[in-house]
Length: 64
Image (spheres, rainbow, N blue to C red):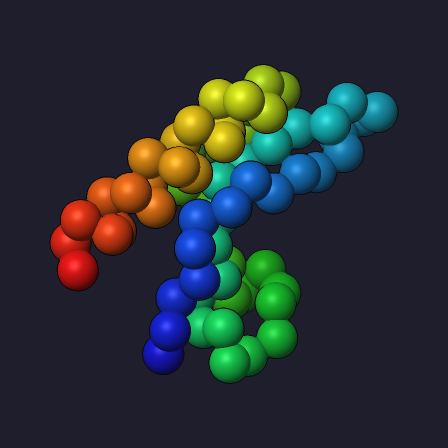
């Protein structure tokens, strides 16, 4: 099972675009809500979500 990289995902809620950091748990299976691991909560600041995703990806690289 190969996990995907952390990415910024968006969700419109009441006309406002919110962002959350997530990654696909098993890239060999279709992308759906049961195949996504999330980190943290929603934010309306895309740059903050991207910074979190970048940090998590860097931490994964350093583990390898």
